[in-house]
Image (cartoon, rainbow, N blue to C red; front, side, top):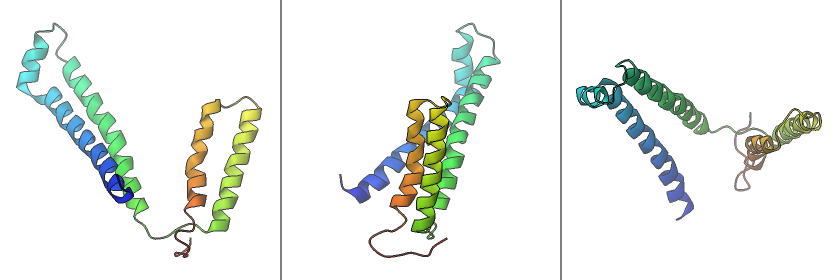
Length: 132
């Protein structure tokens, strides 16, 4: 799959799954047929809206930051390369200090990738964009 198509397909799949889960959660929490089927299980009636509401809140907790991230990602400005390198070095140094003191789990090193991704994308295709 080419890069452009992959860039469209993966976010499209994520949004589709989020919308389907949101729709099914609403149906589970509010529909009469779900109420009828859930009554046959023998659990109290308040559990069905509580479970459906929790699923709705969980979907919204993922969708709102995703919408915000898309909005921020569409901006044209990029961080300056020098500033990005300084930021990456500081975050890495702080992670090393915390790790040496036993304060971090080893897999928390994966949390450094967004910082170094900013360093890698500070200059794109050999041309400089408007800098922050």
